[in-house]
Length: 269
Ligand SMILES: Nc1ncnc2c1ncn2[C@@H]1O[C@H](COP(=O)(O)OP(=O)(O)OP(=O)(O)O)[C@@H](O)[C@H]1O
Image (cartoon, rainbow, N blue to C red; front, side, top):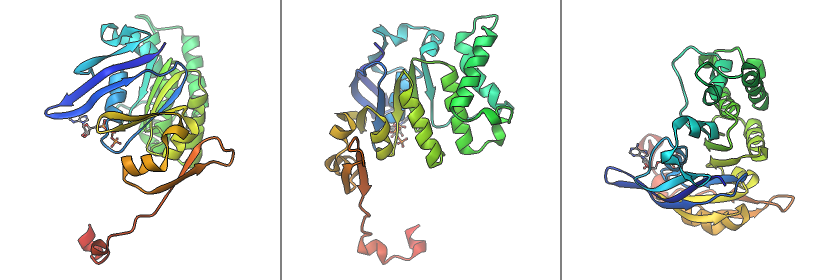
């Protein structure tokens, strides 16, 4: 068993952000969460991570309600990388990644050899070993992203939640990080905007629109030209990759409406 969402509702003020989300992933599967801006992907990930409590519904971990679990218990299982991880503290790359070990340490610290091995492995997996002594604030955006992923891997979670993990990454690192995550023997939820990467690396795709799930299935079942048109209001062609394994989307360029085309550049901004 793994994380399960049952009838999740979450509102802020008068805005309903998640309106009844049910999802029951298979242990070990890589789930891609896709949907337009503001459709509720980050909110759902934060609820699944136990960071935010839903107004209605429950999240369970191996059948136990997460709200009845202690923070540390949850942190030993679930690691999350959100979109805006940052710190003002003067801390090295190694220091950031070592934070992932805290849930496994008791009052007097943990097994330092086990912790050091987990940190070294996570740095290696994310290609950050050579920068382990650099200070966090000197890193590029993509390097910071990889360090946050290393921190989550050092946590040795059984469930990994990643919110737009490929933001800031060059194409090589996008492919490497998603290949790494999809090969790990853990259940992962990855919010992604890139439908082609979602199709390549996720075993199942969940599509959110305005806080509700509108489609769930394998990439081939879900990523269709009709869905891209319906959910994103974009025309696209959807074929299969060279190996015939997963769908690949080619977007059609939108025609600029004549009224906008006639405007000068300064009027457009
Ligand atoms: N704490 C909050 N208070 C008020 N509104 C919120 C809060 N968190 C999220 N929202 C709103 O909920 C909606 C869903 O936001 P969320 O960040 O979950 O969407 P998303 O699908 O991750 O979007 P994006 O693709 O742009 O990252 C948005 O309209 C957002 O403004």
